Length: 169
Image (cartoon, rainbow, N blue to C red; front, side):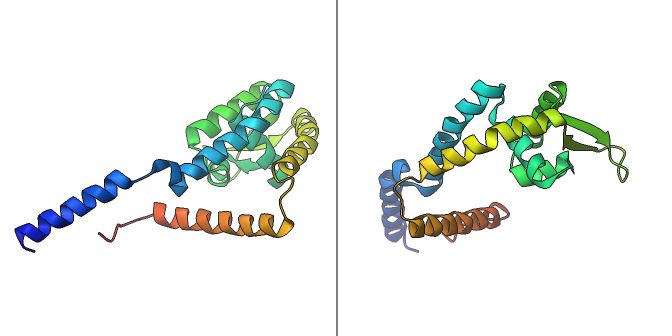
């Protein structure tokens, strides 16, 4: 490429960078939406049961799937292992989950809800359902279904790209 063409290309790339609008950038918008949506419900479970977002997610997944390892919770919650570990420790201290050693790997604990954990979950589920309904109030059911398909697609593609995105330019 000639020096003049290279400078012209670099200048155009610079303009493209200058025109980049974070406010319209899909990953940023998804992050903002997730944060705002989570904060609204988080306020409720914090007020009622003193739970943070990681604790609620661990509690909800254990209720949905039954006993599982911390490693499985890391995979299913998409949270860092440190967050899952801290959430599990907090829930265990409060008597909401129980830990037992895995029979397959003595280094690993299997976590499960206690009776108290089941009661907390049962108290929060109707609120979670009402909150989700309020979020989508006024939307056409077909729009909600389309949105869920788009979110599933973007999530799958995000996971794929996280494993090895290589820009073409």
